[in-house]
Length: 488
Image 1 (cartoon, rainbow, N blue to C red):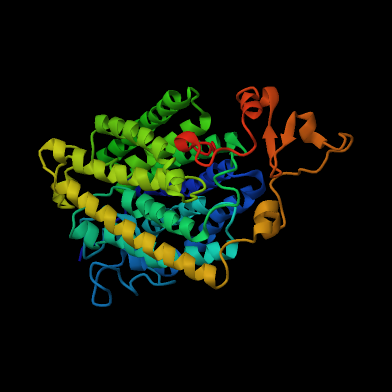
Image 2 (image 1 turned 135 degrees about the vertical axis):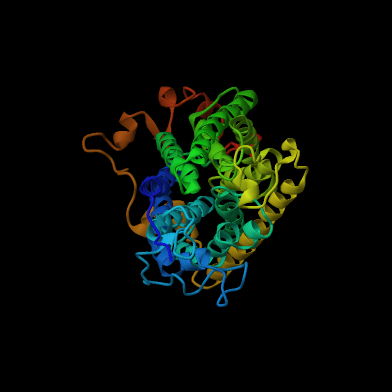
């Protein structure tokens, strides 16, 4: 039998991509942390960091084998991978992903590298869900949910889409880097969990404003940076398709920034940095499934549509009455659906021959393929939506009824950071010699009814006009859905 060989160029690129994708989860922690209130910033960020710890171990223990192990006599064909092929600490130092003695035509990447690359995807998918339940979730409940949802949802869905399961192999739906497996998956789970935990105290009557907009922008920047590994790395090679995914990631994200702030400009006359940051994330989400299968001009159009639609979508929670704290549904779920369906319109074999040769998919509508691929994309997205939502809702309900998922009302009002973790993100005690008002008074920062520091006067973005003109409690359903100023 021929010996498998390592392609050092492909392997080096995947090593870099793995590091980039791992960086995205701390970036997400900053993005979510900045959007959160000051008294819950640590709890919010810890949910992301704890996901790194928990999911990394579970992925090695059994996740990788079930997601990417071969469909064999031990497994449910098409629905889950091998239960033993890579189980636990079994070693495979000589085996190469796609380049074994049995499959010498593979691209020559060591299995450990591919395992670690996919590990980072599993980590951030779980972490994304946490944004829907900020300010009110116990860490113990979150960790139990994360373990259960990872096992029952992420692992099988990754197999369905990328590991030889029925969505990729039988349905022939396209997903280059995670539109269904990551974003629709996490967005549907976020909706289910938000419904189980219920609304934050005071929502939507009170305003829940981001406590640190620079954190938001820094987090979005790290996500954008890391996303090049997320998307371009998913080619698992350094070749022309990698370059296509790279440029599409950039231009779609850039266009989405413009699309989101254009909506803000038209609706309120005031484009915001939070809006631009959120638009960037919406573009990154939408281009994820499509980046390796569409031409760059289609990526620009996709970004514009995703940025504008997601800017509207974040208001739907007010109309429908569910408290998705940081708009995981409005950005990741909606953006993931947009990107997945976009493939039914603009996917083309001319951009990536693997569409037909490897996946067995068809050209999109605008390339003469009719609605066949559009239907496949819709079906795949719907299957993942229903499964993820149902399991997340069931798991959340069960945890809430047993160990309890939501913190007490007192802890929520006083601050979840102190109640859950005995620490706070900021020292809010009076500064020595500064008088009873402390350092915040010297900085021109006053207190809000719920104890949050609030910028007033000339330090405020609008010069203090909003504080003077608006009551402490906003309307029941803020216009445009952005009264919280969480996104936009």
